Length: 363
Image (cartoon, rainbow, N blue to C red; front, top):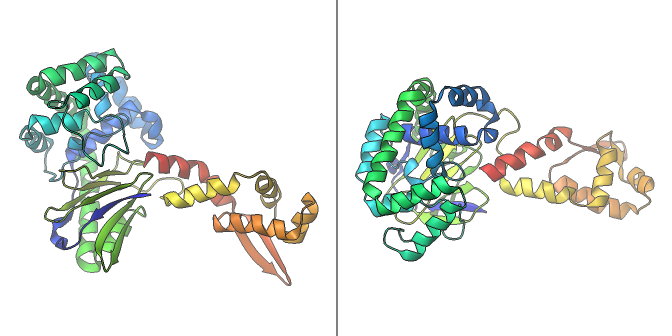
């Protein structure tokens, strides 16, 4: 499962690494809305939430569907600017249909998003869908969406003022502190791209990013629990580093939009970025009563196949089959002592399964 961006024939200079204040503001707003997703930001989210004026907190609640469970595409600029004001000016130049369609795509739909839905400003089905989705999130959100559909220009001005008020209240100071690290990250990846090539730059950005090249062309692959595909031919690809975004990993691949990838610039404290398939393999390997019983012994020390067979009253070949599944999933340490092969559970890998799973589903 992955998102694939076809870059066949795309000049390397059209692939850029650049921080975005608007994208980082979107991440910061998400962290305030879902602090449990971001335990490393606990001190910041707690202090910032406590300092928000009630009026601003209420306004953020009205519009939080744009950053709570997903991220509106307009919060991921294809052409990042130096300042938030410049990026908000770019948003002002976007037409109403595109802006409102992006703002109200709030369902995280993995089947509809890649196809591209008509704007709810011009399509009745999309309009009813947006209203239904908003109603499920609460009466204030429903009223906000209704207002956006009937008065898009005024509502867009309201959103801009909200972003500007957030900037004044807390984000300007936050951006001053993180922009240096983000700019340094982008410069480092740009230099890797120039000197070592795209594959090296992508790998340095995240293990969840890779480059595929064959006789059919070149593709950037984003390891996520969704299927998606888009083309960057004739446009560009922008990669945006983020400090507030981890563990989320965003890829903008909607039809009609330039591809944008937002990746965490900071290294997670626990584990790392494991491939989605590796996480699935480990969870599947443990989803069997015999293998769970074997793990009880393997967690306590190193055992041979015959010892495990004797302990559980099953045949050695059956034990070998179960051990092979655990080993393929990367859960075992195997060593030879004389004529015996001993197996032991890799406790460091097992201890990370929970955090690796959470990182995968939130990526």
